[in-house]
Image 1 (cartoon, rainbow, N blue to C red):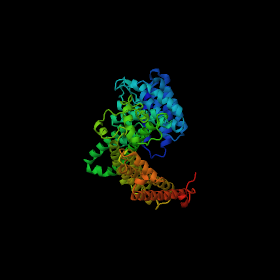
Image 2: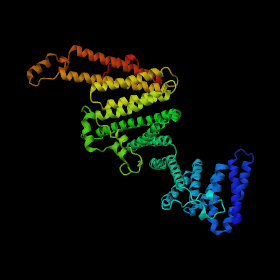
Image 3: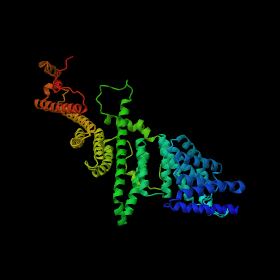
Image 4: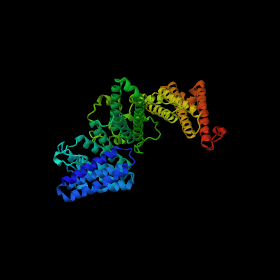
Length: 550
């Protein structure tokens, strides 16, 4: 036995040296010969010494891992080698000499299975191995061995034990592999759970760089935004900002290091800005959806279809009383029962989270707060891009800014404020349209911009008409104490005129007609232009002035 172990140890040392000598012309040939010799010796060792059988299996597993990583063989051959070794070791998964190598083999095996699109088998292996994660914590820290250290003549009880952090790291890698698989299988609930678990473990172990962790956490937060789970999105984006900001401030204390990483920090904060903008826009969209759903899902028998709609002002009270609607159910689904699961307990994020809007918008005041927060991050991103160098990103930021103004106008109660906001939205779109005229291959984007401009002009015209109507109503209030006979007389005197027409001043009527004519002419031009760009036939200009006969 000692002689066999001595030959194995000596040959394995040759393997180590061969791997290190990467420039040798005979490297692969010598490596293949030595590995084959070791495999034969280990089989003999296991058969002749029953008490060393499991140890020989662990060493065989290490050689299988080494072969898959180092030898130029096909992906299928690598999978077969690792699968055979994994099946041999699985019955002894919690043995001190088998656990670590089994976890490493399982990780690489599942990676190859996913590449070969054998996702069902990869999922089965990953989910089966989960059972041992909790069991590992029940063992003492100095229990398990690295299979690489088994290639020695020393008895197993004298071999140095592995650092527990190595096992934690492999388990974390396996969890991350599982999250990647669930994302590939389009299982968002499982993907978010396992991705968050991997990030939490890496944070606690301080594995990798803070910048890399912050970006991956921010991307998970962005995915939560996509799922409309905004509570989790907010927590992850706050965690990413906290870690990235802390790393940035610490790096500034070392000027030479900060100069080298300054550009990287700018890119990282830029990506975080985009995620925050999407969070703010998503919260606006859900808030609008909640209000509109609340209004339009009322029973038809109770709804007055002739009633003038004032959706924001008339239905806020009902939303606040009920406190629960379609959008908030989607936000809160799983949040209450899983608040502790999707958090980072080692980070103190309370102050940062308190500065981030989280409630659905119900008033113009809360809309302004969410607008200010989102606008700040959007401007950080927009100022970074130049239209000539980053045209796609510049266009995206401009469209997001226009959308942000649209959301703010929806929640604004004052007509003049609505008009001012919509005018700013129009200015953004007109500036973008001017830039698009100088570029080629952006026809589809330009069509969308022109259509949105047309919509904005229609809304501006509607606000003008609404304002004129309010002014007219305030200046032409009937005196209910007036004699009824005089009212009848006034109606009879000019039978072709209404009371409103009679009392409306000529200057007011002329101003109203001029504004309506200008708005109609502008929107007619925008409509014809968008049709020409799209290749669709549009009505002639004279058709806008035709009388409708019933």
